[in-house]
Picture (cartoon, rainbow, N blue to C red):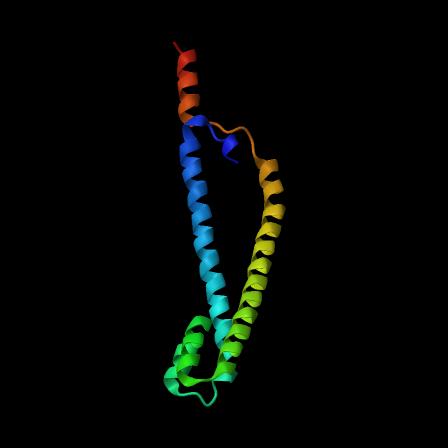
Length: 137
């Protein structure tokens, strides 16, 4: 895509491409993290029944926090439940991210060929104005 830009606009095109890449990364991490967090909390919830409130709160944060709580309350089954919940959350998160990525790829496959057919020569208004003024001299 950048090779289609005039040399004078290559820096701006590169900056836009880099910004889009970084924005996509941030959004991907945020969406993936949110999906994993929600899935982990739902999966660990049944294992927290009967545990004291502070233990439940800490175990809901992450599998690592659940492992720290296990040593204090002597509930080894909670560590296994946290590991299982984390593994499940990882699989669900990866699945959703794959679905989102495939949908994005499908949109690109559908729209890029159309955009390529409509593309004409790239005209630089400053260059064209300078060229037309040379002929008037």
